[in-house]
Amino acid sequence: MKWTIDPTHSQAEFSVRHMFTKVRGHMVVASGTVETDDLDPLKTVIVARLDPSTVNTGVQVRDDHLRSVDFFDIERYPEIVFHSTAISQTAKDHYAVVGVLSMRGVDRPVTLHARAAGDGIDPFGNRRAGVSARTTLNRKDFGLQWNRALESGGLLVGDEVDINLEIEAVLEQATQDAIALLAKSELAG
Image (cartoon, rainbow, N blue to C red; front, side, top):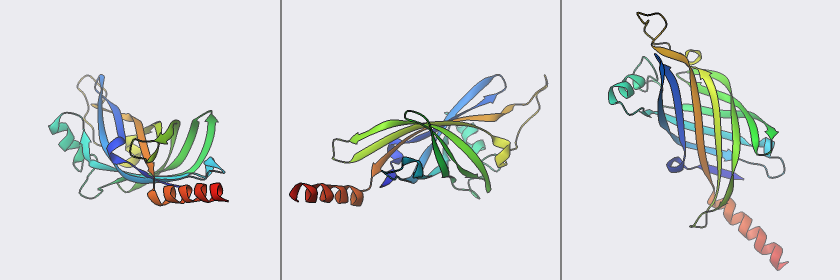
């Protein structure tokens, strides 16, 4: 079955150390698909695209800096893409989603620790499903090298970035129609 990620109900949040505290922000999950296999959920394939031009930490000057060549370089790299390559179940409703994250022209393997949040029919008759996922990555692995030395020692920005994802997807209408037609024919026959 093919699902489409709903950008209005999905979000990527991050946090990274700035001197002594963590700065938090988010960006839009712009688009994506989830292709599932009812017989084998571990054959699921996920592709998600994030829009780094939407980065928002609540401070315009910092957000503009994050969009610049020092960090996301949105003029040259207008999207961040995750493409799953393998999924394994780690506990009930918990999965390790292995994939490739492409950011700033660099492709690196990443493992998302995901929890299926359930699925159901919304008030408009659409079947929806949700998942929460998290990972930690080193920003320097993706070419985000900018930093400043502190007078007291250490660096201004930490290397580790914690990422939390909330993804809601809608079953594509053609798939919903096919399921309804199949259910109808089974009832008739």
